[in-house]
Length: 395
Figure 1 (cartoon, one colour):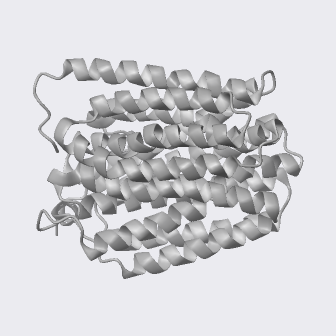
Figure 2: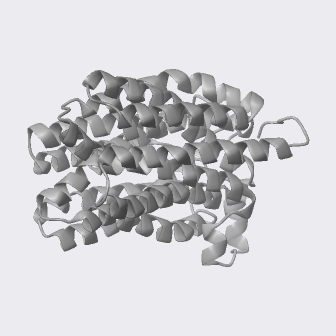
């Protein structure tokens, strides 16, 4: 059945947000530390990029299948399967220091991640009243943002002060908590799922990979995360080069500003739409990238993190709500999968392309190059805004 009222804050929604937070924290703790870990066990510049790229490719390949499954399957079993798979694969990292094997584990991790994020995001859409999707997905997105921003700072601290193995064990512990919370969540299954069980839709890889109606905001999301990919892959290495021991401060202030701004930006989206919000946030993100590239103190990292949190941190749930607003309820799983795939593709291609450039330039230059993706985002968003012939009607 579908969500019966306009009420947003229900216990299932709260449990799902918390469970998703622990899922992202478990995963994001590892993310910025894998490139330097690969480097420490003998990986070269290309392999440092591949650790992100292979993961992204795997996540993208699995999403059409999970998107199709979501059209005919109850949410809880799919969500739990993704969470358990993430936990199992996380525990594999300490068993080897052979770069090729780590890359294979990373590919498997990408499959589990693609499955989990698509199922979790679609489950959230089902629990949120359609008319409050911007606000609701903004709060759900806050669990993603905090996980993406605060967990890396904690992970970086553990990696620099202790061992990679300890980092993995704590990550696994957070994954166990997520599984417990998912098990306690009462999920909602849309009526369209039951209808599709009677007349099952045919599977098409391309049709389940791409929701054409949501293609434009997914493209803009891709370009945005391409810019972010340089930070994910190289900020720890940049900190070492610059002799900065406060890289975690970038993530902390990033999360702080993203958290403070989220209630405001979510409600703004529902009333005004995505365009002006994304344009302003992209401009702030552009400035943040340059502040980061020029950082020579921990204070600079704090300023860059705060700006990036206000900019990039506010944009991502707006992109997700924009993607979802373009499609129908029965294809929201496919649209949601495409949204996450655009993120993975952006970060993955960024890591691969910048991996080649990294051999010839300083790390700070990678941030400067990536910053211009936000200028392109501003231009494309403005173009779409100019095409609108009617006032924003919400979702």
